[in-house]
Length: 518
Image (cartoon, rainbow, N blue to C red; front, side, top):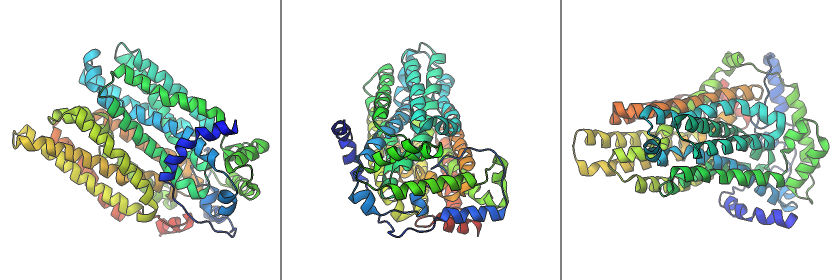
């Protein structure tokens, strides 16, 4: 069985090695800074409520708080192949997420024709995915805490499978919408539980690279859907969404549950066994296990927060930063462009197949590059470069549609449209796609991270729904006006990043909080 598991993860080890970021460990154990933050919170006054706070959603985890054990113990003596295998299995959920997100663009013309859907009916089909994701995101935390991270992934997979089958057998708009809603619910759960599970199982020196594999696999799945959607029928493309679900369900039998979740619910034997499995048989896990237990005990002593507590003065700026970044990420137009890409190119007089494939190919390497520079370049520079590129891309795309509508320079229209859209996805992948989630995980105090993260996630999915639903209507109103609106929103995002968002690279949580409060 050991050999079988080891061979299963070989492929992913090669993938992960390309995004591996080495980082040195502090060899001397330090006093937990989480303890200091707890005392600071208690000094400021208790906050009461009843909110379930996921273990890694709210605090980076043990390694990120500088409760460190040596890399000789975790790397030199231990084989981390189980970490790679577990990550590979988990990111199959990310691939299922991306398959759902990328489905509507290459299938719009075929579905509309085969089922005689109106523009409004297809807009509902495209956007209801994000409505389902809103529901999934808000329920994912309690589900993951109640039945575990693996149980939450199984639940999400079940909804995704049911959704894809409903779409495959659909005879009208209602069946399509039910299926799309179900896959959206699975997306929402995956969007939370996959990065949380990876962060909870990974050692500190691999956590950044492995967690960003989540976003990379989403982009890969969207690209695959765009490419194969040009040659497969829409029903067959729906069946391909079952493949990552099948791999995930099968793989969950071979990987351990999150040790931190097991520790939280008091399953000591299972906790130690899972941690030993992840770190290798020869690894000394006593120090890490003690750190996790200390973390759980400290977490239980923290005051709980309610939604209204987020608007207290000491938390307000953190909330503005986290929610603001999510607003600009979504209302800058990404889901409208992604969901209806083929229709955009067709409207501009460009071959949808060629342009969509080009879009898909360029998205993956830029996202992969981003995973290697985020800890070197910093969060704020990436956000500024990304937002500036989005403004220029929207202006180029808007110009192409303006020229087309006024029958000016017709030969330039396709070039400007393709250049603008490719620049848009490149710029989004370079910063605005992933960085807001990173900043959100860093700026909220430990006792409000659960509820504050839920609020930011809900705002994000609401924005995704609003943009994807209104995009077709805006394009019917004014194609170039639509891109000018997105350009204006992204321009405001630049001002927001410059004036409000702090740089968090290389800072402890205490330093970040001090900067925000100042």
